[in-house]
Length: 111
Image (cartoon, rainbow, N blue to C red):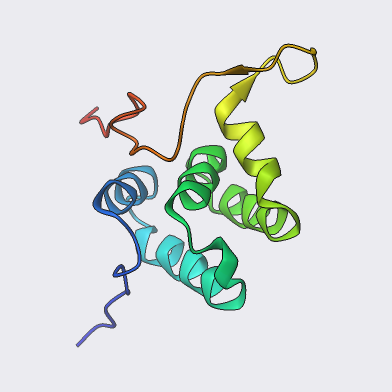
């Protein structure tokens, strides 16, 4: 009998996105996230998790990298994931990860 990955702390849109972005490695992606959340409980927030998954761009190394950044300051990953024109004085918010991936028009597609 195989081990079951704990997805209880994630909303359904996050579960679906991880399964879509990491199809053959979704259990490992969940384990990486669960481990990070156990060691930094303040990251146990759907907005932070969505930002991390979005920025990871379907790469496990990216997932680890953005978790590391979020541990230092979660505001960084929110800025990087939700805003464009970050170098200018006029930041433009293009996503709000308080809302689901679907609400941000980042739905899982059957490609």
